[in-house]
Image 1 (cartoon, helix red, strand yellow):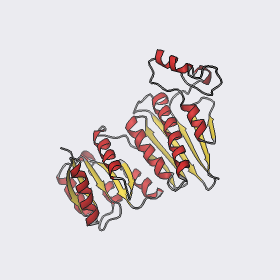
Image 2: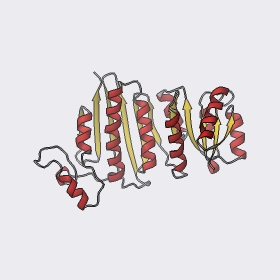
Image 3: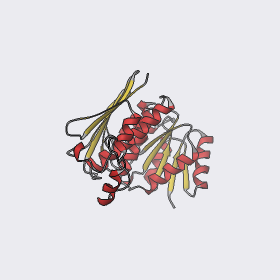
Image 4: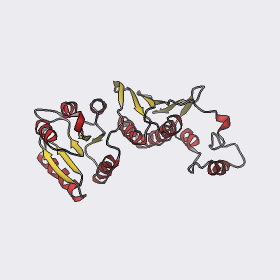
Length: 276
């Protein structure tokens, strides 16, 4: 049975989290602050820790920085401080995921299960720039890291109108998966990068992958723009090549954002969504 350590200074929230996890079949222990938690982690093995940030004696950032590397459990940060600064500092201290309060219990249990089922040594997300309006991240081209990157971008987009946030979420997912699957070939040794800029007028996201790019004229397995009399012709091409169903990714992204621009090699892409 997976062992989870809940670290929360609020007694009722600590008890509630433990109860939620135990009802879902997990074994839990609890600590009221970072000092007690660190002593427990140095003494016992835990598969996952769920932790607050702002606690007495030792806050979550310090705790993350002092976790023993040899037996470091994955850490999911759950906090009411849902700011870009808290998110990016958590990333710099190697947190696995970041969840703002209040949270949906079912969503939390789903994220816990995903974290426990993923490989034990997650790829490190490097924070190259942590300005709230200009974030740069570099990360390995692997699927488990992709979902964590999407978690980050979704938090950075908080406060946007729901339909704008959803459009960015869908467009970013499609382009990120293209970068990791095609550009990075799902190779954890290869690194991709995103730059996320947010101003009062627009949100811009640039994705750079380590591949050589692609030739739009040779994309017979995908729809770049619907001009053919047979808009589903790519389905047969994808089947012949043994590819999963799809092919409308770029067309979908174009419908969701205001601008979509590739560099000459087509291994870097920029999307822009205007806010006014």
